[in-house]
Length: 115
Length: 110
Image 1 (cartoon, chains in turn blue, purple):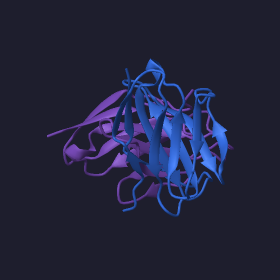
Image 2 (spheres, one colour; image 1 turned 30 degrees about the vertical axis):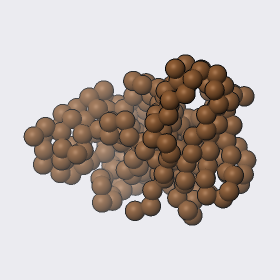
Image 3 (cartoon, chains in turn cyan, brown; image 1 turned 120 degrees about the horizontal axis):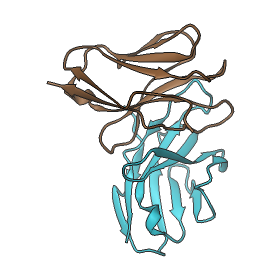
């Protein structure tokens, strides 16, 4: 069964450093998403991306965050200057279509620890 | 805020059917109900979704009431590997995002 692949599985970074989280969505999918989950809390939507542009973003997704599809297969989330409160599991997801009649496939996540 | 309400936890005996309820009394006519589950800290896993008709796939069945204000996810023969947090989600029309609530923590007992 096709999978969404995320790397690395765990990343430790120092506060103030830039970090890039990588995702390889399912190959025929056109819609891409990032979610995060702070330990013990709910899964939260960050951003959706289609046709090389952001289609929707949450209040969490401020100027410190950016997304990119640099080469047609990877989908990345960049955090420019990490803060302690950015420590969380980050999940990438993709879907073939963006309409309501389709589910998403999530990756297994990257655990980001900011020290 | 999530548009759904679920019990915080449930237990189910292995091999029995697990019936997980969800209330979504403010659902609009064209909004779908989705079910996902999260095993430990893994990424959410899609289970099933529906609009108004009952749905079945290889994982589960989804029963939606006629007024669409509630639904039930049925795992017909629960196994220990079905122990997870189950999320019932109504996606707001015109958006791409899911708003996850706290879900139901299902524990399947041997």
